[in-house]
Image 1 (cartoon, helix red, strand yellow):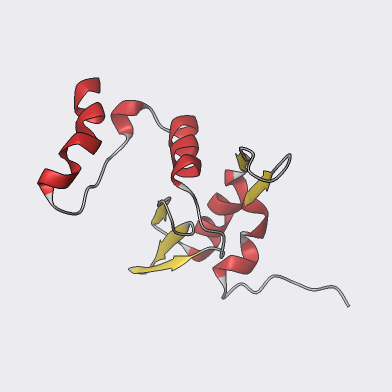
Image 2 (image 1 turned 180 degrees about the vertical axis):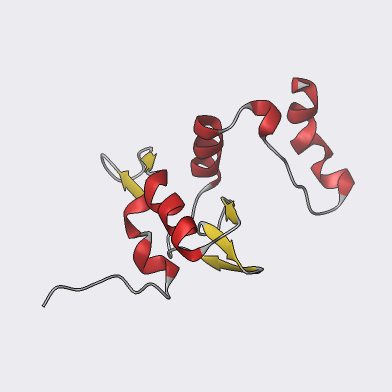
Length: 114
């Protein structure tokens, strides 16, 4: 009997979205994002938003509820790669949470780009 995706569970529909490969322990991963399954899932579920966040899985918003599409945690480098591939620097948004004194140096490079 063939299995069918669980349409109530976003993670089963978007499993093909992410892949990565390594050439050995401690090496840089080659991250590939296939957005087609993510956009297909968004259309099927009538999702309004797609979220790529460091140290979290990819998430979508359906009827005001934000939920992960799978269990794979994105690294900061993976989020940076996705953003660079799909957005112009003018379209990117940086959200900073925390003590302004602590993060000032960390966000200075984005201020210099404008």
